[in-house]
Image (cartoon, rainbow, N blue to C red):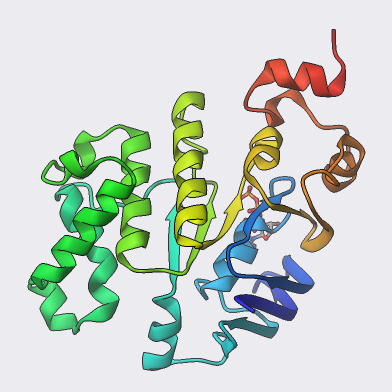
Length: 265
Ligand SMILES: Nc1ncnc2c1ncn2[C@@H]1O[C@H](COP(=O)(O)OP(=O)(O)OP(=O)(O)O)[C@@H](O)[C@H]1O
């Protein structure tokens, strides 16, 4: 099993319930999309998986190893498997694209070496190959903040590839992109998932995107899994249950499709 959550709950210090008794198994190569209202717990779930958030109870295993109880070098070794993609890209803006991608290699080297920015030649090759995979190798020596939003998100995908992650967690990766760029970034994630068999979990706001890219959709509501099934099973009625109300137009990237689905004329 690639990822397994057993009875995972998270209560924040102020008493807010983030996750409630989550049981979940995700296999190698799945492309899982998590949907749900704002505040349903999507980010909390994703951040718990790589332990950006400590859960209150339960256990999370990555490749059969508990990340929940790991610390020190073992925690770092488990985390090396997991690449994280954020809505805001999280790049170091004032340095080159290549350096950003190389930062995916830090988990493989001593702190001193990476502080000095001295990466072995092989790492540079890995980083350039990663950039090639997302079709922006020619941008390697350009400053990250000179790129468009979509290109910056590709850099962050390349960073996860350079990390040689077997799992990619993407928290609303297209939320700050325009519709065309959104498709390109989702296509990149899908291609990587298929070509490299990288297990992918994406939080998405748009329902049509979830249906287009997911091999499995998980619906969260108030910290609980209320749906877990294939795209075909995620009907409009099911989605209305996940959202606790009929699906709205702004939950579709392509509003013309919303009219077909919902039957608006
Ligand atoms: N650090 C925190 N302290 C207290 N409550 C928090 C904290 N982080 C998140 N929450 C709460 O936990 C719940 C789940 O939040 P989460 O961010 O996981 O939802 P989400 O589904 O990702 O929503 P969004 O799409 O708006 O990010 C919400 O009620 C949120 O307010």
